[in-house]
Length: 89
Image 1 (tube, rainbow, N blue to C red):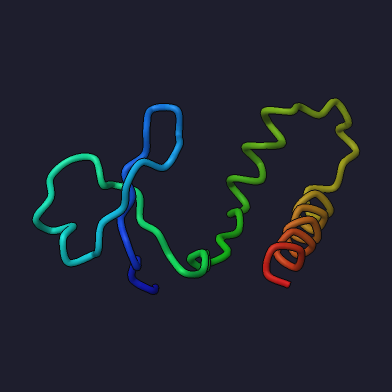
Image 2: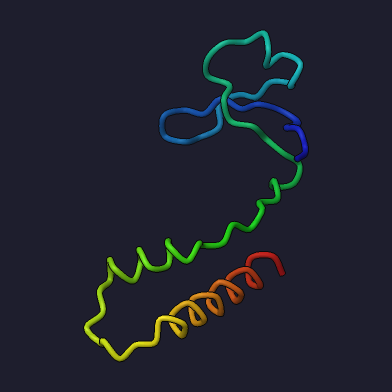
């Protein structure tokens, strides 16, 4: 992952107040806690486990006992693939 080019201090309302060079960051305590990058850091895709998929299914509930468990997982994986495509081009 790229290193930040600066560290920012933000006001409580979220507005930018000040920024410091990364070399200063190690010496300054406190409020310069928001890293700034020239490009946003790339996030690695983390998919759901089968257990997490079933946890979601349990939370939303299903009343259809004819639902094929294999098909539920297959559908969830297809949705994940589309999300991954949209988020990583």
